[in-house]
Image (tube, rainbow over all chains, first blue to last red; front, side):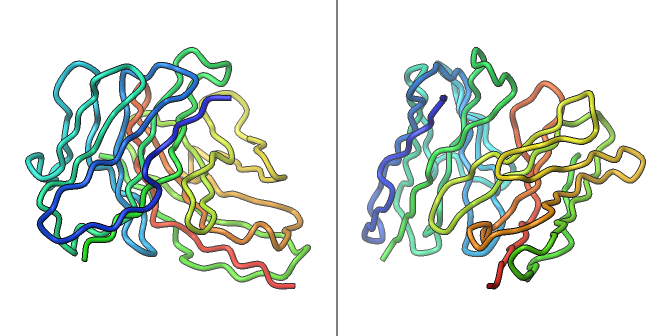
Length: 118
Length: 113
């Protein structure tokens, strides 16, 4: 079945550095992917919509210069947290929809990436 | 705008007992409804979804949910839970023809032996 994979699953970085998280659709092409963040014991909050070949659409309150999104191909979207700070520590999850899959309107989520900024 | 309310942050239940996790939504337009499960330190897995048709939807792992338009609810049920059902459950909606999901705050289901 359709699979969305994220890498890395866990990353620790120093404050002030940048870190990149990849989201790949393994069995299908995804023109649109979504990035969410989840704080401990809280719900998922949509950060941005990643559009292949064009600029991402950010939700209100999300700093586009801090959370850089690149959707360079139909199977890969990347989220780069720039100048990371401890408050950026969170669980980041991406999702994508398989338009051509037998399940139709099914949105698949990646396994998530734990970011810890020290 | 759409919103999702999961009134119960935690639901403790004994193994083999029935369980219902409540979900109410608010939307001025038609929506799709979803339930996802999140096991510790993992991503989300789709349990079931309602797009149209029969209001009773059956999902994986013995779960089912019923869409009630008049009450704007989509409660999740299982007649007999297992220890392995212990997880966080999220209700979500998406507006017709979009892929953006709006999540509820989640319900922690804790199954005790």
